[in-house]
Image (tube, rainbow, N blue to C red):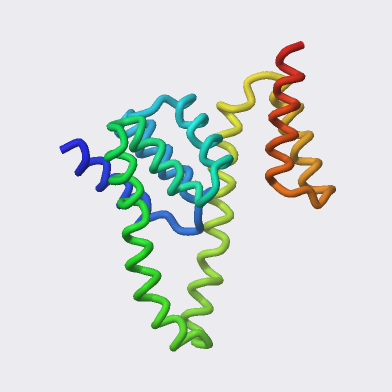
Length: 174
């Protein structure tokens, strides 16, 4: 029963989250932290941090980690399959339709309408994570420093993550 619940939860997350990883965060958080209470808010933030540092899509990584933490290796497989199943079916089906009707005003209108919603979802995820991740001025300093580095340089995101980790060690050991 636990595996079915895990599968259906991540099937729902994968099926109703548009815009990719960061846009999925509010729904993942709602389902995992608040509805099912499989993780605490802090554990959720830790899982997201680990998911960002791991190769691959954040939703797949988060599903894998949550499934493993909740019910073990089989749980990680079930959750991962659940989160990608709907996308796999939709992408396979829609690819044929979109390729055939790409210049249609309906198709371009749909994509134009979805973009602002995705930006709003990403913004909501940022606000939610900010509230619980930035717990003191040192965290705020690291966050703003990384924001400036990202906006003013062409550093690769992996470099930003490594620099922020080093800053965390230095700043929090003082």
